[in-house]
Amino acid sequence: MRLQKYMAHSGVASRRKSEEMIAQGKVKVNGKIIREQGYIVERGDVVEVNGKKIEPESQMVYVMLNKPRGVLSTASDEKNRKTVLDCIDEFKDLRLYPVGRLDRDTSGLILLTNDGEFTQKMLHPKFELEKTYYATVEGNVRKEELRPLIEGIELEDGITAPGKFRIVGKRSAKTRIECKIREGRNRQIRRMFEAIGHPVVSLERTQFGTLKLGGLGKGSYRELTEKEVEALRNSL
Image (cartoon, rainbow, N blue to C red; front, side, top):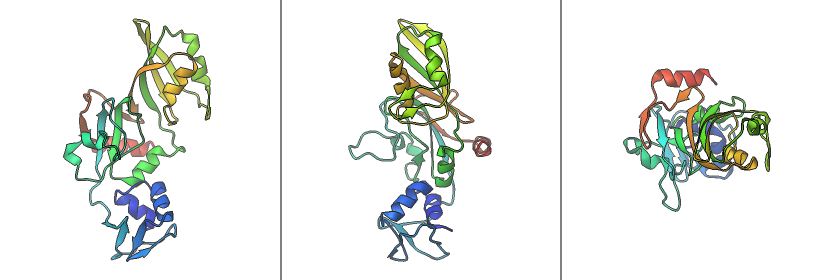
């Protein structure tokens, strides 16, 4: 098995991140630093990352969390702020990693798994899985104002891909909007609404590909069913 794949199956990181760690000299096989991408790991080889022995997980775990606001979508934080792993006590002994990110102030669906290969496929631009968000923004948004968001709007990192945006409610000088996008740029939806003069007040993700948040409460989590995992795999 190729070294980066071995690392991904061990829950260390995605293949791409594993390749970066190999290039940085953080990986040893049988006591020797390996920098060769595609190095083949054979049965009986001892693989270490940052001095710790790793082995492929015997069981793959897939957990859906309804992330509360204020929680970081990362496996650890140097400032000891609360992360998504702190929300899933039942699985704290497993090396789970979030599939993609939600910014600290965004709540909703996030997937965590020890399946590095699956993670890489879920995030690969080739597949562009659709994600659904509900945004509450400042002001009384008119339907025609959403046109630039639907067609693609110029941001500092380029024009966004076309998306689906529709108004679902208005109250107290605020507008609630359903947003469906396939890209995953940093704080993308927040920046898109800022660009049309309607800053986001709150933002929640309710669907990622075929996976739906459903009635899962804030801060709650559950393992995916085999059917849900299969549906995600079939969509890739």
